[in-house]
Structure formats: structure tokens, C-alpha cells
Amino acid sequence: MKSYIQDGTQIIYTATGAVTKDVPVVLGGRIFIPQDSGVSGDKIPCLAKGVVEVDKVGAAFTAGDKVYWDAADAEVNTDDSNPDAGYVYEDAASGDAKAKVLLEAWS
Image (cartoon, rainbow, N blue to C red; front, top):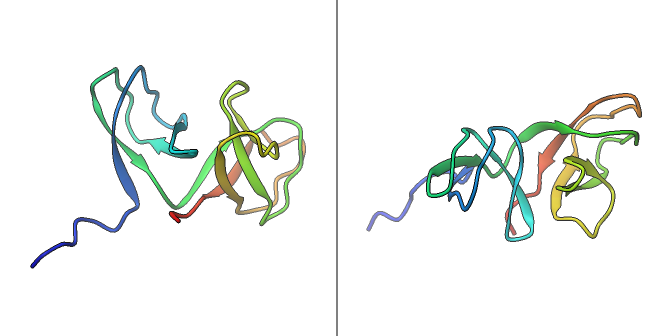
């Protein structure tokens, strides 16, 4: 019996509203990165794992820091009341506008 479908680097998300390419969407308490833009009902491929570059403001991060997605501010930060984003992949200075993040692995 064949049961393998794919390697799990992407999911297919049926949009429930407008989706913008590269702006994280939150599903099940973690973020996924849309690879296309779309509207409600569209099936959008989203990255589920890997290293991505996302917006950040202010804070400096060290590789390995746990970060979370703040949808209200459209950035990653260390506020654990937000959905899991993953782990900082490479140090980011406080003046950097972006952070490289290793998406939280499936559990």
C-alpha cells in the first residue's frame, strides 16, 4: 500500500479570507508562510518548515531564541502569548528589520 504523500515542507491552506504571499497565517497555534496571495476559498500552498525571513522591530535576537508571531504588529517577538513562530536561525541586531526564523517543527 502506498501512503506517502509528500515530505511535509508545505501544507495546502483553504483561505478563509484574504491571504498575502509571505505574510504568515496562523493555523493550530503556529505560523505557516503563504507562497501565493489569494482570497477566501483559494487553496494556498504554505511553508510548514524551513528557514524564512520575517519582520521584526526593535529587539535583538540570538540564534536559538524562541520567537512568536504577533499578528497585530505583524512581527516576531518573544511574547509567548502569541502563536509559535519557531527559533531564531541567525543573530539579528536591534536595528534589523527582519529575522531569519526556523519554523517550529511539527509535533
